[in-house]
Image (cartoon, rainbow over all chains, first blue to last red; front, side, top):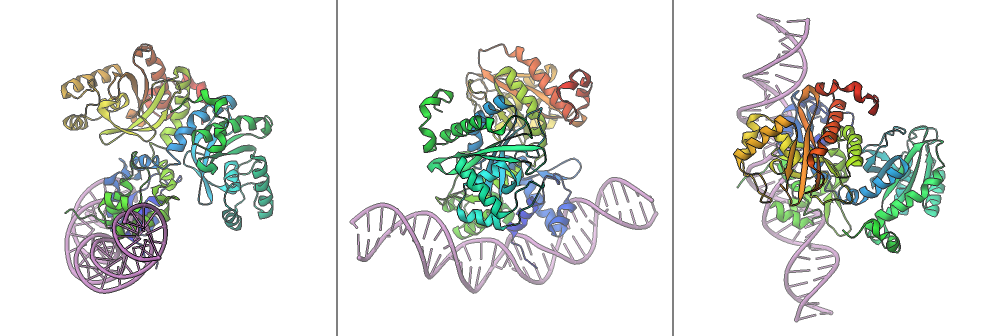
Length: 262
Length: 262
DNA sequence: AGCCGACTTCCGCTGCGTGGAAGTCCAGGT
DNA sequence: ACCTGGACTTCCACGCAGCGGAAGTCGGCT
């Protein structure tokens, strides 16, 4: 039925790779895309020549480094991560918790940085990981600062419940998002996995638009989440200022020596 | 002239983005690829729908987050980085220098991790950055442990000189590479940029193949590079063991408590 | 030896993609 | 106000690039 354009075929091949399928053989790719073996073979080879796929000793294909290289050119992946990283390191030294930097993509958050602490709860968030906005601290912050229409669009979509705590009721979410906008911070408990709490605040860029969110995750029942808010907001303001956010610039004098120009 | 397949056209569009061209308008893409505006327009839109490109308020296109997400699925980008990161953090705490994790791709090294220290020399290496093997510490380590044919292939290619110190003479390089194999460490001075020195050692994976290299860069004339070798080899061995390298496993007992299983 | 599955290569027909052309929109100049 | 040029968007008919069937190769397992 649906006939694909050849650009779509190329993308479909890349799309069959995911965290559960890091390495696939030619015929697996063929089966998953539904393309004939000969078509798959030709396209896969073109992708391999370019470096988008690479072939290993066992004959299986994986995503190639050329894609990794390209991905870092995404403004949210490269520049944002690059400016945020020193601030995130400081935050990690101060808190010894897992730190995430998330940006919006579709109805999801993508983590463009994920610093794992060694001795804390394992969280399922890796660099490049994608999670629904309504189920993560960073996602809720981003959603709270999105346009009205976008929020309603997300609230109207299928809201998957990962734990019994996951907020899936549109009215409860509307209320929560209003709180986040008012207080400037999202604090959630066991939304995505049990026994984990997350605290997240927005990061602003040019024209004070919210472009990302920093979040911290800790085991439930550890230090009061509220005690982490000052450290988080300091980090977020530092990053916002480095990104040129007007509202953060007012505080420039106070923190100027932390990040001298350049 | 050379007729392109449509897969190649798609890839060519992605390929026009680089560190100097993070955001391009439709007609810039059209000019750079040499495709007609209508062809470019159609392909760019297909890429945008899929998430490979994204379009911004000013009408320009950038690489999309979907590509970043995909890139982390590359085994060298995702798994390797993920296992190496805690060790690299430890190394950075101990040395306060710039740390790089490089893997081979073609004749180049690609940095799959780059931890910048705040107070040291700026180095031009970012996550996802690509540099010629013969001009970087990590690259020389990787080259030294490559197959004979590959080494000769690289030595026979155009070896660009970035500074007056850059090793470009094939015979000098052969000699240097032999030293690296013997000593297990590459120490270079001002190869890529002036007043910077780099120390790098190999990381081994399954079957003891060299799969990556850790490197450290410091201002020239700081602490003797040799004093850093123990810290680097410890880091490299830790990562190698975590990757399942047989030679590193012998030392498992000694360092077991640093990284309890999982 | 024979079978099966995975991969590779070849080639003729066809339907997708190409590029020209026409149309829209906006900014800047006269 | 009108024109001009540049950037972008849409449409369509033609031609050839790419699709998929089929045949061939390789290697592993019974």
